Image (cartoon, rainbow, N blue to C red; front, side, top):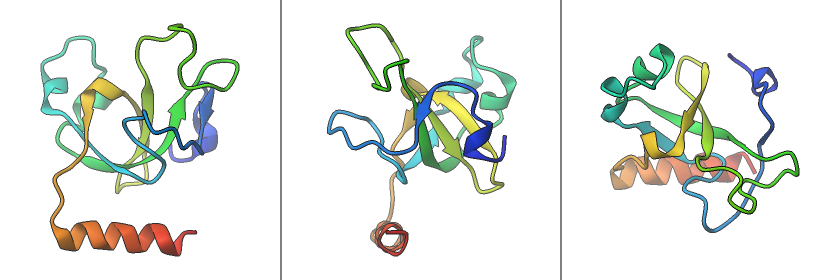
Length: 114
């Protein structure tokens, strides 16, 4: 999928909870463990080791990311450099190790996007 509107699951594009692993606009890298996990789709496996931008998170019917233990995993939607958006469970995503220059460039991008 190429647009956030293509996501069929209930999701949020704006959230700011301190316990979330990622917030909108954060960078996330797909863990290499997805290459060996038989329960990962081929689409996710092909993204192993790649870094993208968090654009959405799955949520419950009420609009909460987690609610009363109803959901075990959180799925984040990551947009990669080729503009494709892929939904990946949080346990298969990590924060990338960034150089100070990369970190500053991301901060400037967030500021320019409002």
